Length: 392
Ligand SMILES: Cc1cc2nc3c(=O)[nH]c(=O)nc-3n(C[C@H](O)[C@H](O)[C@H](O)COP(=O)(O)OP(=O)(O)OC[C@H]3O[C@@H](n4cnc5c(N)ncnc54)[C@H](O)[C@@H]3O)c2cc1C
Image 1 (tube, rainbow, N blue to C red):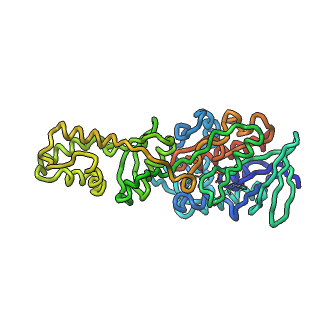
Image 2: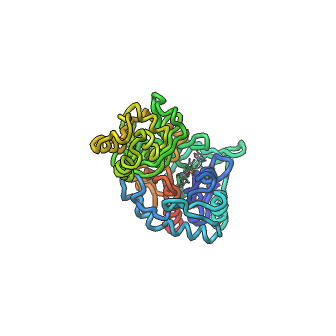
Image 3: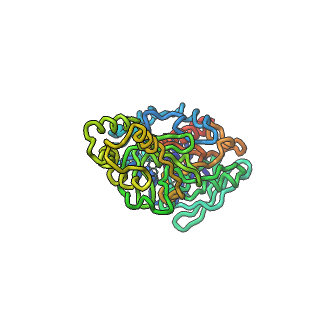
């Protein structure tokens, strides 16, 4: 069988590309349904983009690479598409847009766009061998127990990263890149809970508070959540993408910097209360209890000098913790690293050294923050490749 364009992966990026790549598109996926990650995303409501999406919200060895695609297919373009399909949405927080109803509405929209473009979709199709004979790609596909060879002028690799293998993630995109001589930046889990070897946070499991979490030069002011094995919550997930094994993170439990003034004022009004009782009005009581082992929290608030309170607030603002690891690909929302952007055109996502070969979405070394940015990258990069294929 001969097609113009073969797309491997019917996820966010692959479907978007299929809708824009012109005639003769075949999308193949080994999963039972298209867009499985879209379906489960955002707690079933899909955080499909972010009002404030800009290149600063992406991690890559080349921070400029994502600019072209994000600038040419923006969050406003995707919002316009969603509006065209009358999918109701709302902003939850920090510019994050979610469907009012269900993530399935986004999948149905993308499927409708693919149908409109005449793209074919083969599900439960395994891809084995891929080769290029100088003018076309040949892929061996196995479907319903039968093997067949498909020849395509263009090959678009849209098979995502390694995150959540249970949902069909394989990392095949990296293998295809390597096969064609493209460098791959070591993939690692991102947006992932961090773990601690001594289970020291086990008694705190379920406790949540607001904090500023920093890893390397990045800081995020959002909720943190203690888990049986360590730390999670948006601020920790965000920081995890900047963290490397062996490094420490800093948790600032006084992110607004107003704790000292509050404690000084309570020293006047509630002098006879225990320091821990007063602190528990600002931080979860179980966390205060845990901190007793690390910080001098004895005595009443009236007994605390300005110097002592200042030192305490400084310690709370600089709680340094060294995670033993992360929960890994089992729960990571994304995969950092991927196909080295130096080997790709930022305008078209095409491999510079192999005509007709494209990489889009999560398998590329562009990873967004938590908050709809990763889907925006999938839409923008998928659109960029689709446009380039349709208008050579
Ligand atoms: C639990 C969870 C929640 C998330 N929530 C959000 C959110 O709300 N907002 C946001 O912006 N991002 C979210 N993300 C991240 C987002 O889902 C991904 O960044 C995005 O789906 C990447 O799109 P993609 O098309 O590159 O890859 P994917 O959507 O992963 O699609 C890849 C496709 O390729 C197929 N495939 C893989 N290997 C093969 C193979 N060997 N042969 C054939 N087919 C193959 C897969 O079955 C899959 O259909 C979430 C991720 C997870 C895991």
